[in-house]
Image (tube, rainbow over all chains, first blue to last red; front, side):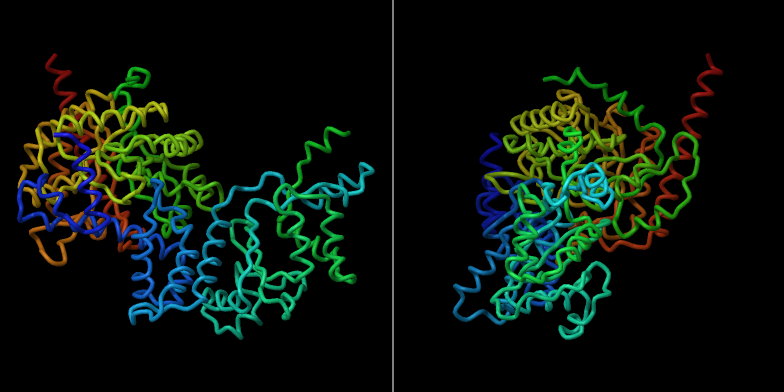
Length: 289
Length: 308
């Protein structure tokens, strides 16, 4: 007996619930309903992974509602790799499309446009948690070394470390996400800056300009814990310059100062060093010596 | 086939000979494990930990760091659940590359996978799907094992599945697994709970099954808890790993050890996770069976020496 027709029929059953194709392969017709063990296992594994990867999303929508939505997502986007780590990459976009196309959501689904941003925040947090470890962290010692070598450290090319992610979300969603994460009300979460893993104003920076239509959230990982905070408008410009391949620090500082001439660059830079956010390839400077 | 490039199954057994009973590593137990004094133990009763390899497919971060801290004091077993050895080998290279990278860093004592399929048509079904026991499926499984072993540069053990119903087959499961092992050069991981469940669900004779497995192929044993199906009750047992190990499974473990001799035994628990101390109690029970098995083996060896 060839293997492929069996696998094809089994796959159809797993994807659709139609077990008729498996009749030819089951010895006992009465046992065919037992096939549900495999289909249930498939969905449970995927839905459990989505629950783990989008915890605030689940908390916001409620467990049953989330599971119903997650099940539909699994139908549209089954996992492709042989692991569920990081499963749900398309979940935020799926939610966005799903909400947009539903005229009247069924009662079993608690849907809100906020769910999309909460999903994006959950996933950004997860990606930061699992990102590569930094091996070239810019430290105060390295700055001192550059200065002692007669260099203008503001000309050093630095970039954001792999765990740093910048994410734009609708105003207010980030506070709601933190409130969900910390079991606080939104008002409490705005005032609370001492929650482990969630540093909101650790360098005295203010939240983004209220006139903007979006908030920019920065995630990063330090000492194994993911941190998150809102960025002010000059901070966003500074960080954006350092994304990707990076740039000279001076360029990043200038970008921030162009938006706010009295912006305290040194304060932000100290916070970046303290939080191990920046990377520098010292080999380049060692060579120059 | 490149199986001759790797140590024989017998050598794989030697690699794990110092191991006693192990536990599946759970994130909620990390603090307990790290706080536990590391005991100097004799050969055959060393505590070890098994992880699902794919859970560590991450670029960096605390998950890998925790595993590094465990590895400092304990042997590890990498137990793959997403390799789909039985089908869809085209997707394997990237998967194997990640397994290989983890093996290079952590140097696990044991490496295992399942004699099942889980990928088809670009989808990963995130569960262990059974293969029909046919020549075509056997050939596909052997090719998958060979690719996996070639990719990681180590021999592996493959685990018998839990069966909930019977599919068309051309041979029984011991024949299927033993032949896969013979052709690919892999060893076998005998999951006693899977076997017990299969015996209850499909009516096979578990002891007869074990008698068909050559001891020199067996490199590891798993035991776990199961639950009755919520609808069908005791007529369909589910491999839940969510309950204490049942009495008949302990009895079948004892019988398996009498046939295979001392082998690393893993206590699996993946849901409804109890406190670490409770799992250590189950681990101590498993170790007790291993100790008695070792005493018996030593006695028999001494008797044979004297007879000579």
